[in-house]
Length: 279
Ligand code: C2E
Ligand code: CA
Ligand code: CA
Ligand code: CA
Image 1 (tube, rainbow, N blue to C red):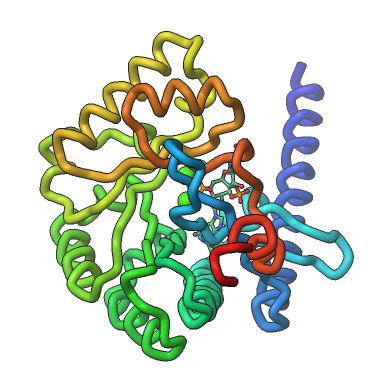
Image 2 (cartoon, rainbow, N blue to C red):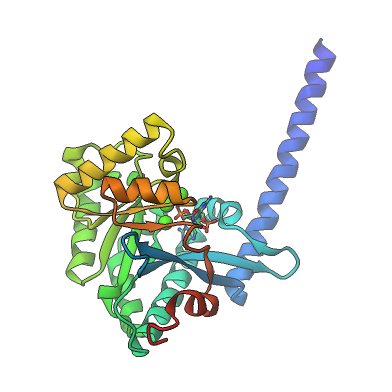
């Protein structure tokens, strides 16, 4: 039994080393990717359920790895977050999205919201607001077109500092959304203190509607909560007409999901969603 135990331990340790090595390789690869401009921003449509009209786009980062091809964010965002690389990654994405929205503005498109994800680590930078202001100035992007998405848990940490930062962003004209809403633990009273504009209902709940009673109840509760706080709503991950119909019937006006389009490069987004809007 002792032998087996030791063997088990050795196997485990070896496994850990392989994992650590893989992580280190990924970290080095990612550093190079940031320097070489291998990151690209894709856009996913956000639409009004009543008529399918485009209301905005979420900017989602993709990594075009020279050998591995397109690497999904689930693989590298956690590593970027752990190593702190997320700060420069997030800034690259914000800059690219602001350049893009400035281009759409100049083309005379009706206003649409371009939503950019802010990681918890970016959000904790003391000079975040100044950095956002600098990128807006540099790109000529209208702050009224920019929405920043933060997760519930990031918002709930260091509440007082967070509220101050959110206020300043809003004073600049940037709007704010809580991402993955429902997966954290914010209470109604807590939420009320946050200067935010929108709740994004997490995909995990949307997936279950209309058939799963628990998910349906949660989605209804979130919609009621948003209404009583005067917040806008967006449902994430809508894949079926049945989900869309349920959400619309319950009073959720805007959605995002594969039913309306996947995240695609800017050129494809323009072709699929902006043609006929002046682009
Ligand atoms: P998220 O912010 O919740 O983004 C939504 C994710 O759901 C995206 O995955 C999107 O492609 C996917 N999605 C959209 N509609 C559907 C649908 O109908 N069905 C399904 N199954 N999935 C759908 P993606 O692009 O792989 O991004 C995953 C996560 O990586 C994002 O989740 C976000 O947390 C993070 N991420 C992506 N880009 C950035 C970024 O620029 N900065 C930061 N900090 N995080 C990012
Ligand atoms: Ca998001
Ligand atoms: Ca989300
Ligand atoms: Ca998510």
